[in-house]
Image (cartoon, rainbow, N blue to C red; front, side, top):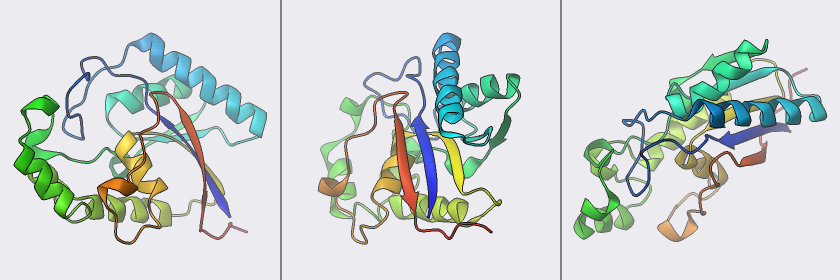
Length: 185
């Protein structure tokens, strides 16, 4: 069994109360990114993990990876690690999104593309493609997004409903997931 060690990115500036997805490349205070990079480096050292981190191209994740790269790590940026694309919802206050729009998503939680962006089924496919690419490592370190992480946590739910969706990890919180992938030899 392979393991994925994934941390949600630090709190980005300007996200409070807004729908923030792949279309919102919000900055992160450099001190927060550096603190998270230190925590990841410390955890990797304790667990004997490789000094390779993968991140989304969005600044709230990639800034952490750039700190690690400064310290000699390999930083891999992959668009498949990006947050869900919320289309026209992206960047808008949650309070401005109509009840009808939410109801349409809730009625087909896995298949509906909120805001005309990307469905959770499409995110899961993007995620599965990334997970299927084996580079020889049995452990992966990732800085990712709440939606991507929750899609991973619920990947064994074939019919996903809003009640199946877990609370998102706190900003900068880590998660360790065993994957149903064969270890490389």
